[in-house]
Length: 221
Figure (cartoon, rainbow, N blue to C red):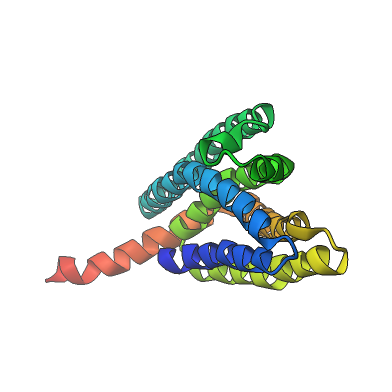
């Protein structure tokens, strides 16, 4: 299920690249976007690590019947990842004119990347929160819900909005990416609402009951 969740997001950004390639200035746009996506992928390694760690920790705490510890672990993980994301976001905004030098010496591509750095900063900030919340949901046993939320947010909101902004309003790669950021923002907002409204004590009771049921046959044997 974890692989399915990340597959939806991976294909989401791959589709962004394909859509950008169909623009009038597709070659430059794809080159600039590839630079931004490479930086985003580097930074995403940190939230993905938080995703895995948070999912395991929340599942363990709920299985032990400690809802408060699961809630605390969720808050600490989300806050830590968000702070790291804010640091990267700030660095990108400060060095926005120099980021592309890591990948290319083309002045045209460097200028195109410079125009996209604000969107890159927003994407990194959202992606510092969303994977951790997904990890909380996975650890709580809501994998199916997360998959449906991702599917609806990415492909029901983000892609259509990107198409409208990119082609109908002629905003180009910035419009396509902005629309897809909108899909990620919707997904993040829904996960925040679900996490905030979660009854951790009730989830802990359910998890403990499941653990006892699974352990019962072993004990009788």
